Amino acid sequence: MNSSSHATPHTLSPTVVQPAALTWRDGVWLAVVVAIGINLRPLLTSISPLLESIRHTTGLSFYGASLLTSLPVIAMGIGAFGASTLARLLGETRGVALGLIAIAFACAARWITSSGFALMFSAVIAGIGVAAIQALLPGVMKRHFGVRVTLAMGVFSASIMGGGGLGASLSPWVAHLAGTWHAGLAFWALPALLGMALWLVLNRALPLPVPSNHTQSAQSTAQLPSMWRNRRAWALGLYFGVVNGGYTSLVAWLPAYYQQHGMSVTASGSLLAMMTLFQAAAALLLPLAAQSSHDRRPWLLVGLLAQLAGIAGLLAWPLAAPLPWVALAGIGLGGSFSLTLVTALDHTENHAVAARLVAFMQGVGFLIAAIAPIVAGMVRDATGSFSAAWVMLVIGVLAMIALTFVFSPRSYARVWSGS
Image (cartoon, rainbow, N blue to C red; front, top):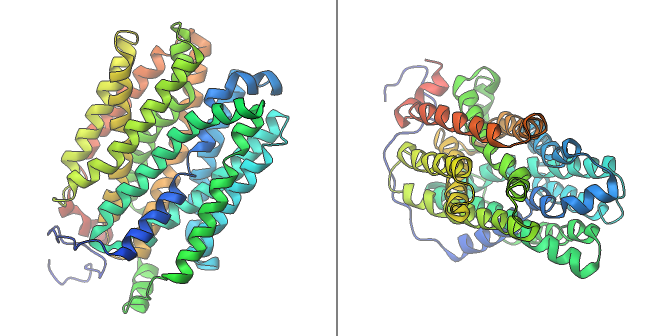
């Protein structure tokens, strides 16, 4: 790399550094990251299996029901833009804890919720909490795990997807035991409170050391061009949004799609749970497979091609073999989610800058992803079928396959130089 004025301390060479073995401290950190991650998706996936009961009680239309999935994702997007301000005012530790408190409060409030508007309001509050955690925690993890961040992000992403699967499978069971759907939604306040307690204990017992280049790092961050004017930040946001648009659409409408084809409520809900299981596995395993190379593009393509095959199968042969299509879609969605986060973190060695880039990417991405289930619901109302919605997802994945080739490690230095 030359020593021009454009070179900055946070640019990254494409050479690969072999990670050292994990320590017991790393294991404790990963365990707490898992305890936090499982709280970030049940607010989305717990709705779909209980949708008919919720609609019967609240009188929500299908369009209104789609907002219970879309509104939290919109809140995730808007909230992510304020993550850097939150970190500056409260710090990363308090910011993550505050996010868990918001999730716990929103879920607990659903115990007494009786109107669609109140449900939507709780969805927004929970979404803001998720936004804070998803935007702040990756930067903390990059600072703690260093060259092992690929493994750490895989574990974090797997816990997010696994939490989604737990939301789809446990919520109906809790609702059945309690005799009300309110319990199935409110239950998720408990793991959020547990995650907050573990997070605070972790940061008191095993705090992160202040890096020796802390002052220089802060100055470098202040001198960076705005993410709003950075083309790579926008490209990552678009990429993240289209990938997660497939997730939000399938979470919202996969059970309804198969119920339309004559499948029972229980069986269609099980397909959603199976999809999240494959998501969790891919979110962990694909980053591990990509760890030996700093160029993540081949593995991003693996994820996108799996997603493409799964959605195409759902469209063309929905009843021939639903489980393989759901499995392929889950593998693609989970692996792409995790690897996109890793790819964003690869762009800089500065953990504060990485957090800022990831926050912006998620802000743009989740706003895009929030539109997808709404459009799918509108298409369903207009055509009586989800087929057109699945076609749009296929087109989106094809476009992202083309965009993948932009993310060459050799381009990372130019991202910050403006060249």
